Image (tube, rainbow, N blue to C red):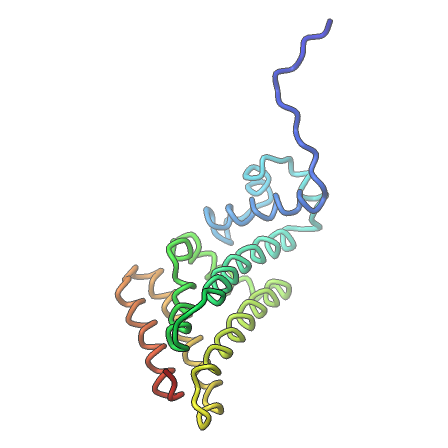
Amino acid sequence: MPEKSSRPAQTRLTSEARRKQIAEAALRSLQNHGHSGLTARKVAAEAGLSLGHLTYHYKDMAEVLAAAFRLAADQVQQAGRRALIRPGGTPSERLDRFLRAGFSTDLMTPAHLRLRIDLWSAALTHSEIASIERALYDSHRDALERLLDHMAAGYAYERIPAVADLIMATLDGLWLDWLRRGDEQAVKNGLDGCVLFARLRLGGS
């Protein structure tokens, strides 16, 4: 009678689940090695799969990279959505809560911030990644402008786009500054300044 194998049977995943597994592994590889160090072999090793699985489920590494960045963008968007659905607070307090959601402990790690820089860099040469980056920006800005709309006095509605421009640029600068210097007080000062500027320009509470 043949001896039974002690190795646990592998669960057969659907194609969609396998693609997600590979994308998650690629995201971890990006955080560990950066965009320039990402290879199919490293992604396969991280996922515990053969290289053949990658070529079967993705046409090339550019598509794997796009899937990984899409997961990273979803994480950022989820943080903002959680802040938006929390009840209570004045319009400026809700704005403050939303802005700080993008600087939570799990998002302010060197690995995640390097991933953000890599996303900006990859968007310059990959059209699909550029569309992911643009969608992330547009989603964040749309939520921001809706919050500013609730803050604005009637005479100040036309100022909302300019206020949003300054806040979005400031957020990008604060992420870069944190990656370079790791100064928590500088981030706090910058976010406080965004809320104060919005209140002064829009006349809101």
